[in-house]
Length: 197
Length: 197
Ligand SMILES: [Zn+2]
Ligand SMILES: [Zn+2]
Image (tube, rainbow over all chains, first blue to last red):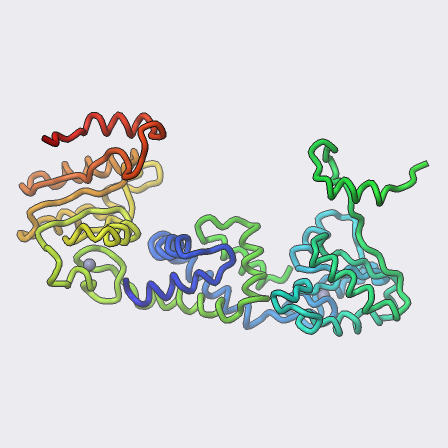
């Protein structure tokens, strides 16, 4: 096989979830069926690294110093929601039930993968939370072992700032049936039950 | 979302099997976790289109006019095996049981997808088969409807050249058990049975 082609296959393996087989399939597909798409992909990648930085306020990827969301005066700047990834922000926005600001960790604490407080730039989060406008910090890391550990760490980190700190609720998924719910989720739903009368 | 970022996500969707969700995941992964891999991918793609052409003899992708395999004097140039894709060539080579030459169609006849004899450059295959060294043409398109139709078409196309034309055998997979074989395969294995005494 030509060196140029094997380099292409090798380089496609950097994509998450792409092994040798799909990398080979993708390479031939691009060469044979979609040269324009492939060149466009190459340029988009190079373009991204040339133009994208991190928003000084929320840490999301953006082309400007402060992103559109952070500079939107229509958002409630007294609430800051801490999330793991930019995709979580998209999910939050889709609910149309949150109008505050965000801070994106770009990951979660995961000592086994070498991701500690330094790698997540927790000091930047601390600085952000100091902002006197912020009255409440909502921690919305995932309900996984690592997400929970990250939540605990952040709570400890910012507690001296005297802000209200909350965690999004854990419980039964909307539309779910008890019969088909895993016991862990059900146990949480019971222990976090709410008084309704 | 930033335009540069949404362009990147959009362009990743050109990869086969990549929808909006995985494109988004891939984009953030590249930006956050593997900038070097991403830039390397972009350059490999551009490099491929700059350097790769088609071998004048077998139609495979290569950097030279004639590829290494076609110019290898150790190969038996009296047999030409016609296959659909470059990945099929890799499979053939892995068997170590074929030492002839190849011709790669880069697809199969598929009228519904707009792939006819012209799109597959069947005239180039015809010209290739004219080579007086070639005594036998082995047709190894897939045993699918489209692969079979392609095989029939090629047989008709080259029959006036007076070469031996063969099709690789269809039958029970090696190591398979009758109980777990689909009836179509078993029926083929019966009708194509070989005399062994
Ligand atoms: Zn921002
Ligand atoms: Zn060749």
